[in-house]
Image (cartoon, rainbow, N blue to C red; front, side, top):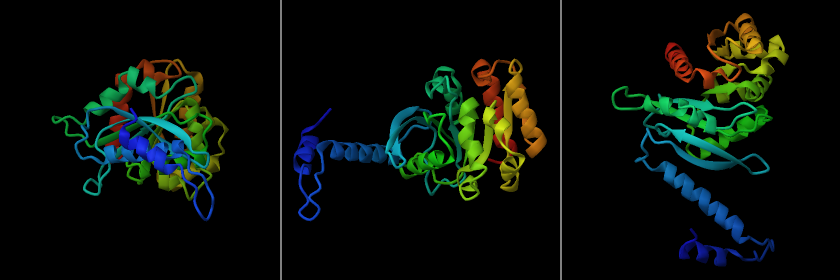
Length: 264
């Protein structure tokens, strides 16, 4: 809803700078104001870690919109041990599938009073065509909007979304900045990656949990290659190519065990 305050902002913002003669449009001001409100809301300490929130940030040189779901504690200087998990999606899916499958809720519930979890989960609609540079831009935007701490995170990359992670292997300055651990789910880009690219993860001491379904021959090849080249931990679950949707409870269990084993 456009309030009287926003209307006044729009009217006063349509100005011409005396030196640059640059016109600042009402739409630009409205977008900036909306982003500021979004950040202020995220900065509030009263956010319920069990509640799933949604929103969007802009990233990259083209100011593309990146929508997200988030739950769990928000980053703060008082919580340096926060575990941050980022969920990407395959070509045939979106961030909605993390929610409708129940996986997002299961991960959020780890933060209840009984389990006393310290897990921040962010599901993104990053395009599967994104490479490491675009992933880095998204990472920076999410960090500046207080959804991520700016420290390296654990990323789950089902299927085609693995392209962005694999390309980081050829970007030694970005790889350790963004990636703390990697959970590829039948990420086909692995098969086209050279051994030297994959070795970059081993050199950077980034643990990998490779998951595939027992009905997914291609996914098994991905897991086997990562096991052989970088000594990844491999897990086979019951299901097809999007095995995380076929075996959601088992998927969450394996992810949480991996995070615990690696001290993440």
